[in-house]
Length: 273
Ligand code: ADE
Ligand code: ZN
Ligand code: ZN
Image (cartoon, rainbow, N blue to C red):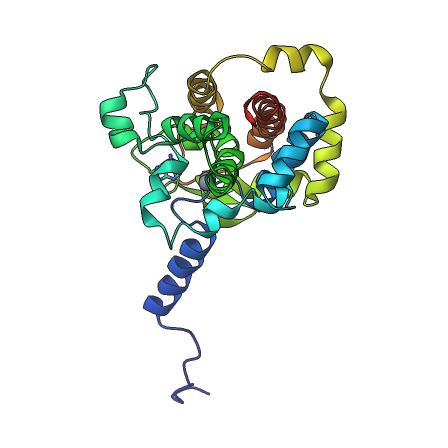
Protein backbone atom coordinates (compact mmCIF):
# COMPACT_ATOMS: atom_id res chain seq x y z
CA UNK A 1 0.00 0.00 0.00
CA UNK A 2 3.02 2.25 0.21
CA UNK A 3 2.63 5.51 -1.62
CA UNK A 4 -1.16 5.17 -1.89
CA UNK A 5 -3.10 7.95 -0.14
CA UNK A 6 -5.83 6.45 2.09
CA UNK A 7 -8.97 8.57 2.63
CA UNK A 8 -8.91 10.23 6.06
CA UNK A 9 -11.93 9.15 8.09
CA UNK A 10 -11.18 10.97 11.35
CA UNK A 11 -13.32 13.97 12.35
CA UNK A 12 -11.41 17.26 12.25
CA UNK A 13 -10.17 18.29 15.73
CA UNK A 14 -12.42 21.36 15.94
CA UNK A 15 -15.52 19.18 15.35
CA UNK A 16 -14.50 16.78 18.16
CA UNK A 17 -13.98 19.75 20.50
CA UNK A 18 -17.33 21.27 19.49
CA UNK A 19 -19.07 17.94 20.18
CA UNK A 20 -17.57 17.74 23.69
CA UNK A 21 -18.54 21.37 24.44
CA UNK A 22 -22.13 20.86 23.21
CA UNK A 23 -22.36 17.62 25.24
CA UNK A 24 -21.23 19.42 28.41
CA UNK A 25 -23.59 22.34 27.85
CA UNK A 26 -26.56 20.03 27.33
CA UNK A 27 -25.78 18.03 30.48
CA UNK A 28 -25.03 20.99 32.74
CA UNK A 29 -27.26 24.03 32.30
CA UNK A 30 -25.91 26.85 34.49
CA UNK A 31 -28.88 27.42 36.77
CA UNK A 32 -29.93 23.78 37.12
CA UNK A 33 -30.92 22.32 40.44
CA UNK A 34 -31.03 18.77 41.74
CA UNK A 35 -32.26 16.97 38.64
CA UNK A 36 -35.98 16.09 38.49
CA UNK A 37 -35.23 12.89 40.48
CA UNK A 38 -33.86 14.80 43.49
CA UNK A 39 -36.78 17.23 43.56
CA UNK A 40 -39.31 14.39 43.23
CA UNK A 41 -37.70 12.51 46.14
CA UNK A 42 -37.85 15.60 48.38
CA UNK A 43 -41.51 16.23 47.48
CA UNK A 44 -42.42 12.60 48.20
CA UNK A 45 -40.70 12.66 51.60
CA UNK A 46 -42.38 15.99 52.40
CA UNK A 47 -45.83 14.57 51.60
CA UNK A 48 -45.35 11.65 53.99
CA UNK A 49 -44.50 14.22 56.70
CA UNK A 50 -47.52 16.46 56.06
CA UNK A 51 -50.74 16.53 58.05
CA UNK A 52 -53.90 15.61 56.17
CA UNK A 53 -55.05 19.26 56.54
CA UNK A 54 -51.85 20.55 54.89
CA UNK A 55 -52.08 17.95 52.12
CA UNK A 56 -55.68 18.95 51.45
CA UNK A 57 -54.77 22.65 51.30
CA UNK A 58 -51.86 22.02 48.93
CA UNK A 59 -54.13 20.00 46.61
CA UNK A 60 -56.65 22.85 46.53
CA UNK A 61 -53.93 25.46 45.86
CA UNK A 62 -52.40 23.33 43.09
CA UNK A 63 -55.80 22.39 41.62
CA UNK A 64 -55.30 18.68 42.23
CA UNK A 65 -51.59 18.42 41.38
CA UNK A 66 -49.18 16.81 43.86
CA UNK A 67 -45.97 18.36 45.18
CA UNK A 68 -43.86 16.04 43.00
CA UNK A 69 -45.87 17.11 39.93
CA UNK A 70 -44.72 20.71 40.42
CA UNK A 71 -41.32 20.21 42.09
CA UNK A 72 -39.19 20.87 38.98
CA UNK A 73 -41.43 23.51 37.38
CA UNK A 74 -39.10 26.45 38.31
CA UNK A 75 -36.29 24.77 36.32
CA UNK A 76 -38.60 24.22 33.35
CA UNK A 77 -39.50 27.94 33.13
CA UNK A 78 -36.09 29.44 33.83
CA UNK A 79 -35.37 30.20 30.17
CA UNK A 80 -38.81 31.88 29.79
CA UNK A 81 -38.29 33.83 33.03
CA UNK A 82 -34.54 34.59 33.02
CA UNK A 83 -34.88 37.00 35.96
CA UNK A 84 -35.62 33.94 38.15
CA UNK A 85 -32.27 32.23 37.37
CA UNK A 86 -30.37 33.68 40.38
CA UNK A 87 -33.21 32.71 42.72
CA UNK A 88 -32.01 29.08 42.62
CA UNK A 89 -28.71 29.58 44.48
CA UNK A 90 -26.59 31.85 46.66
CA UNK A 91 -22.96 32.37 45.77
CA UNK A 92 -21.27 32.46 49.20
CA UNK A 93 -17.50 32.33 48.62
CA UNK A 94 -16.26 28.87 49.61
CA UNK A 95 -14.00 30.02 52.45
CA UNK A 96 -16.45 32.51 54.00
CA UNK A 97 -18.42 31.57 57.10
CA UNK A 98 -21.01 34.37 56.93
CA UNK A 99 -23.23 35.79 54.21
CA UNK A 100 -22.64 39.24 52.74
CA UNK A 101 -26.19 40.03 51.59
CA UNK A 102 -25.13 43.15 49.70
CA UNK A 103 -22.85 41.24 47.34
CA UNK A 104 -24.28 37.71 47.50
CA UNK A 105 -28.00 38.48 47.45
CA UNK A 106 -28.30 41.72 45.49
CA UNK A 107 -31.93 43.00 45.38
CA UNK A 108 -32.98 39.85 47.26
CA UNK A 109 -32.25 37.75 44.17
CA UNK A 110 -31.00 34.57 45.86
CA UNK A 111 -32.43 31.30 47.10
CA UNK A 112 -32.42 32.35 50.77
CA UNK A 113 -34.46 35.55 50.43
CA UNK A 114 -36.77 34.19 47.70
CA UNK A 115 -37.67 31.15 49.82
CA UNK A 116 -38.56 33.41 52.77
CA UNK A 117 -40.58 35.73 50.51
CA UNK A 118 -42.58 32.90 48.95
CA UNK A 119 -43.21 31.35 52.40
CA UNK A 120 -44.64 34.72 53.47
CA UNK A 121 -47.04 34.63 50.47
CA UNK A 122 -48.21 31.15 51.56
CA UNK A 123 -48.79 32.33 55.13
CA UNK A 124 -50.63 35.51 54.18
CA UNK A 125 -54.41 34.98 54.50
CA UNK A 126 -54.90 37.77 51.93
CA UNK A 127 -52.93 36.03 49.13
CA UNK A 128 -55.03 34.84 46.20
CA UNK A 129 -55.03 31.15 45.22
CA UNK A 130 -53.03 31.84 42.04
CA UNK A 131 -50.36 33.72 44.06
CA UNK A 132 -50.19 30.82 46.52
CA UNK A 133 -49.86 28.31 43.69
CA UNK A 134 -46.86 30.16 42.31
CA UNK A 135 -45.34 30.56 45.79
CA UNK A 136 -45.85 26.89 46.63
CA UNK A 137 -44.15 25.71 43.44
CA UNK A 138 -41.13 27.89 44.20
CA UNK A 139 -40.97 26.88 47.88
CA UNK A 140 -41.07 23.15 47.07
CA UNK A 141 -38.27 23.62 44.55
CA UNK A 142 -36.08 26.06 46.50
CA UNK A 143 -36.11 24.07 49.76
CA UNK A 144 -34.64 21.32 47.58
CA UNK A 145 -32.09 23.56 45.88
CA UNK A 146 -30.73 25.04 49.10
CA UNK A 147 -30.01 21.54 50.43
CA UNK A 148 -27.76 20.86 47.42
CA UNK A 149 -24.44 22.11 48.83
CA UNK A 150 -23.24 23.55 45.52
CA UNK A 151 -26.29 25.87 45.40
CA UNK A 152 -24.89 27.63 48.47
CA UNK A 153 -21.37 28.49 47.39
CA UNK A 154 -19.05 29.78 44.75
CA UNK A 155 -15.40 28.85 44.35
CA UNK A 156 -14.80 31.05 41.27
CA UNK A 157 -16.54 28.27 39.36
CA UNK A 158 -20.25 29.25 39.38
CA UNK A 159 -21.10 26.72 42.10
CA UNK A 160 -19.11 23.94 40.43
CA UNK A 161 -20.78 24.53 37.03
CA UNK A 162 -17.40 25.45 35.59
CA UNK A 163 -15.38 22.82 37.48
CA UNK A 164 -14.54 19.91 35.23
CA UNK A 165 -14.27 16.43 36.79
CA UNK A 166 -14.02 12.90 35.42
CA UNK A 167 -17.13 10.89 36.25
CA UNK A 168 -17.68 7.29 35.07
CA UNK A 169 -14.77 7.83 32.66
CA UNK A 170 -16.26 10.95 31.02
CA UNK A 171 -15.60 14.65 31.48
CA UNK A 172 -18.45 16.24 33.40
CA UNK A 173 -19.14 19.22 35.62
CA UNK A 174 -18.89 18.93 39.42
CA UNK A 175 -22.27 20.65 39.76
CA UNK A 176 -24.01 18.11 37.50
CA UNK A 177 -22.36 15.24 39.39
CA UNK A 178 -23.96 16.49 42.64
CA UNK A 179 -27.33 17.43 41.08
CA UNK A 180 -27.84 14.23 39.16
CA UNK A 181 -24.87 11.92 38.44
CA UNK A 182 -24.27 10.50 41.93
CA UNK A 183 -27.98 10.31 42.69
CA UNK A 184 -28.66 8.22 39.57
CA UNK A 185 -25.93 5.83 40.67
CA UNK A 186 -27.42 5.53 44.17
CA UNK A 187 -30.85 4.62 42.77
CA UNK A 188 -32.38 5.76 39.46
CA UNK A 189 -35.93 5.16 40.76
CA UNK A 190 -37.13 8.22 42.76
CA UNK A 191 -40.19 6.48 44.28
CA UNK A 192 -38.07 3.60 45.54
CA UNK A 193 -35.31 5.82 46.92
CA UNK A 194 -37.80 8.19 48.60
CA UNK A 195 -39.44 5.24 50.37
CA UNK A 196 -36.06 3.83 51.44
CA UNK A 197 -34.80 7.20 52.76
CA UNK A 198 -38.10 7.85 54.55
CA UNK A 199 -37.86 4.45 56.30
CA UNK A 200 -34.38 5.27 57.60
CA UNK A 201 -35.30 8.58 59.28
CA UNK A 202 -35.48 8.18 63.06
CA UNK A 203 -37.78 10.13 65.38
CA UNK A 204 -34.73 11.83 66.94
CA UNK A 205 -33.45 12.94 63.53
CA UNK A 206 -36.85 14.36 62.60
CA UNK A 207 -36.94 16.37 65.84
CA UNK A 208 -33.37 17.60 65.35
CA UNK A 209 -34.07 18.71 61.75
CA UNK A 210 -37.42 20.41 62.37
CA UNK A 211 -35.92 23.62 63.66
CA UNK A 212 -33.86 26.57 62.48
CA UNK A 213 -34.22 29.14 59.75
CA UNK A 214 -33.68 29.09 55.99
CA UNK A 215 -30.39 30.89 56.65
CA UNK A 216 -29.28 28.14 59.10
CA UNK A 217 -29.98 25.49 56.43
CA UNK A 218 -28.10 27.47 53.77
CA UNK A 219 -25.05 27.71 56.05
CA UNK A 220 -25.30 23.99 56.88
CA UNK A 221 -25.12 23.26 53.13
CA UNK A 222 -22.24 25.70 52.75
CA UNK A 223 -20.22 23.92 55.46
CA UNK A 224 -20.61 20.67 53.51
CA UNK A 225 -18.87 22.39 50.57
CA UNK A 226 -16.01 23.34 52.90
CA UNK A 227 -15.75 19.92 54.58
CA UNK A 228 -16.49 17.43 51.81
CA UNK A 229 -17.50 18.61 48.34
CA UNK A 230 -14.23 20.43 47.55
CA UNK A 231 -11.53 19.00 49.90
CA UNK A 232 -12.32 15.43 48.88
CA UNK A 233 -11.63 16.30 45.22
CA UNK A 234 -7.92 16.46 46.03
CA UNK A 235 -5.51 18.55 44.01
CA UNK A 236 -5.46 16.82 40.60
CA UNK A 237 -7.25 18.65 37.79
CA UNK A 238 -9.50 17.45 36.48
CA UNK A 239 -10.27 15.46 39.65
CA UNK A 240 -11.66 11.97 39.25
CA UNK A 241 -14.85 11.06 41.09
CA UNK A 242 -13.55 7.77 42.49
CA UNK A 243 -14.94 5.27 44.98
CA UNK A 244 -13.43 7.14 47.97
CA UNK A 245 -15.19 10.33 46.84
CA UNK A 246 -18.47 8.42 46.40
CA UNK A 247 -18.17 6.93 49.92
CA UNK A 248 -17.98 10.48 51.32
CA UNK A 249 -20.51 12.12 48.99
CA UNK A 250 -23.33 9.55 48.77
CA UNK A 251 -24.32 9.68 52.47
CA UNK A 252 -24.27 13.49 52.30
CA UNK A 253 -26.61 13.45 49.30
CA UNK A 254 -28.97 10.98 50.98
CA UNK A 255 -28.97 12.97 54.22
CA UNK A 256 -29.59 16.28 52.45
CA UNK A 257 -32.57 14.80 50.56
CA UNK A 258 -34.00 13.47 53.85
CA UNK A 259 -33.54 16.81 55.63
CA UNK A 260 -35.02 18.77 52.73
CA UNK A 261 -38.10 16.51 52.64
CA UNK A 262 -38.69 16.58 56.41
CA UNK A 263 -38.17 20.36 56.62
CA UNK A 264 -40.42 21.06 53.63
CA UNK A 265 -43.22 19.00 55.20
CA UNK A 266 -42.69 20.76 58.52
CA UNK A 267 -42.85 24.25 56.96
CA UNK A 268 -45.97 23.43 54.93
CA UNK A 269 -47.74 22.00 57.98
CA UNK A 270 -47.54 25.43 59.63
CA UNK A 271 -47.42 27.84 56.68
CA UNK A 272 -50.17 26.59 54.36
CA UNK A 273 -53.17 28.78 55.08
N1 ADE B 1 -24.82 29.75 38.86
C1 ADE B 1 -23.91 30.52 39.46
N2 ADE B 1 -23.65 30.07 40.71
C2 ADE B 1 -24.44 29.00 40.90
C3 ADE B 1 -24.65 28.11 41.97
N3 ADE B 1 -23.99 28.26 43.13
N4 ADE B 1 -25.54 27.11 41.81
C4 ADE B 1 -26.22 26.99 40.65
N5 ADE B 1 -26.06 27.78 39.59
C5 ADE B 1 -25.18 28.79 39.72
ZN1 ZN C 1 -33.38 25.09 40.88
ZN1 ZN D 1 -28.06 22.49 40.54
